[in-house]
Image 1 (cartoon, helix red, strand yellow):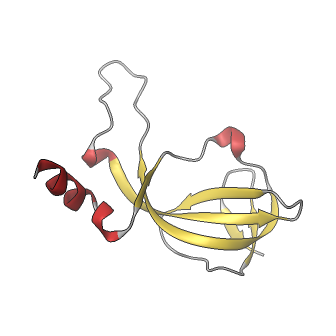
Image 2 (cartoon, helix red, strand yellow):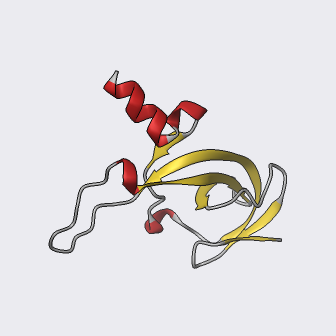
Image 3 (tube, helix red, strand yellow):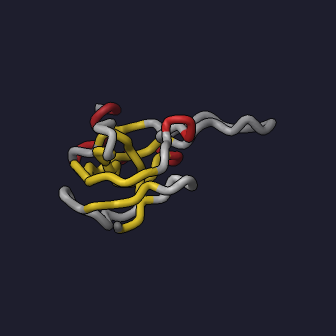
Length: 102
């Protein structure tokens, strides 16, 4: 019963996946085409500061994971707070990790 309450309270019952943020080391700038936009819940990473708390249901935030096929054929991911793009859109991934229309 408790598990059902937890799932319902986090929004996972609506088909959202629980994911970790995309690591900055995996982000490369360049041009590509959006392959998919998937609703997800991103778990914030635990703070390294003294008194940091573990991630819990309140630390999740609804986002959209955008997968982009780059010109070199590799797939990259970005997490956006609103569904600005759709499959087939040509985009630029910036050094700052942003996704902008091409």
